[in-house]
Length: 170
Image (cartoon, rainbow, N blue to C red; front, side, top):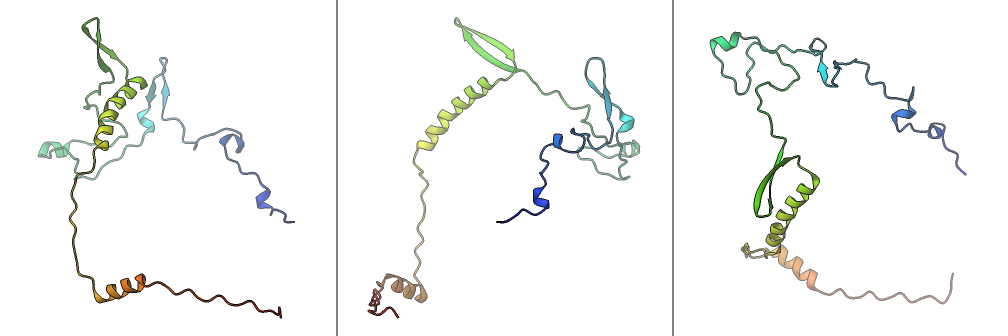
């Protein structure tokens, strides 16, 4: 019946393994650092771009004085060194044999489900209560066009008479 056009016959390459050499080669920019013996990544700052800001660049949280205006400031794609470490340990108090034991470990999926179950019970109880906010009804007088439309909508339509079938076909 119909034959596909020539462009439709080409198979779409949906994964990177079906394209060119069979693997993703990146955008050919090269590495921005190297891995050391322990396996940690060490960025090479000579390969990173450093942007020089305008002379009177306002930095949020920085007070400008005559001395700080002369300090060199370079924008770099890293987090500040003055940031406090975020706690990565999950502290949980467990009661065993009448004693409370503090356990320091990572936050796991079971812990998340337990916390969710605790809050879900309170949430279900809150949602089960009826909505108590009172709404005020504002009564307005209908305009004459609204009255006419309402009367027209309420009047029943008279059924149309069905056409009688003719005895002759033509």
